[in-house]
Image (tube, rainbow, N blue to C red; front, side, top):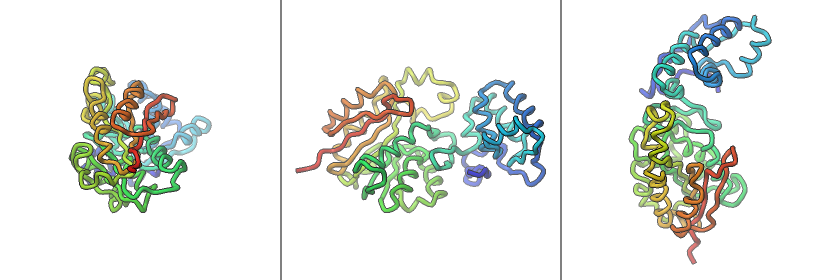
Amino acid sequence: MAPEPSPGAAQGLSPGPSDALCTAGCSVTGHELLRWRRRQLQLGGGSSQLDWLLDLQGGLSWGSLQQLRLNPDQPVELAVPLEAIAALWQRHHDTGTPLQYLVGRCPWRDLELVVGPGVLIPRQETELLVELSLMVLVGQPQSRQPARWADLGTGSGCLAAALARAWPSSCGIAVDLSAEALRQARHNLEQLQLLDRVELMQGSWWEPLQPHWGQLELVVANPPYIPDAVWRDLDAGVREHEPRLALSSGTDGLDAIRTITAGAGRGLAPGGWLLLEHHHDQSAAVLALLEQAGLQEPQAHADLEGKARFASARRPIDT
């Protein structure tokens, strides 16, 4: 996606020091940019993070950066001055603030989402929940749309936005306990022209959905699932900046998942599906919780590294 000013700036969401685009004169040579890049990497941090920042904020794709190594004499047109990108990089190293918060947005799947403090940064592995959702109903992607579905703990609204785009004729509901998360989810859905397809509700898991209990044909959730002790050992950039409410969930990390599975029998429609993301070592425990809740066909699903990170099950069809 072409670079643009942080959409959060106009909405009061996570403004950064480089929100102003170049009006003219943001051209540098390849030699200048490569020297600048070497200086920035001396601060520490990975080259992939810096290149991500150059791409998203400066408009220089990874492929174009590689071409500069072969032809450093060619000019480079940037969306913002190098000084502005350097200021973000310096702030990232000084404070540990995630680059996504500093830029104010995050590419995810085929979307670009507003993100800021108070909302979990969407992870690549969570994209697989969308693919599972498209396939579980009848086994083939997009061959059937649920009449009504829900996203529990919507955060930035990433899952809700992806499902709303995939199922334009269905009715979606995005739930979150955090008012800040719902504010950013609303902004993302509005920017993507999806707000008419998704209703936003504030509250804890199934509770706001009570008027729709027994009608939800599919429910997805990427709940907090990190054990408290593990959360305390997370990288400082995650632990000190991303919301604990969206990350940790009790001694074993399963408190939220227990609540979600326990309510599935009432909330789901007969034959309706529940899909969950969980910690990489919780598969057996989550499958057991699904069975204890009386759900059928519990199944583990692997992430991109082959680790069982997702689970699915369905409510029995009433007879």
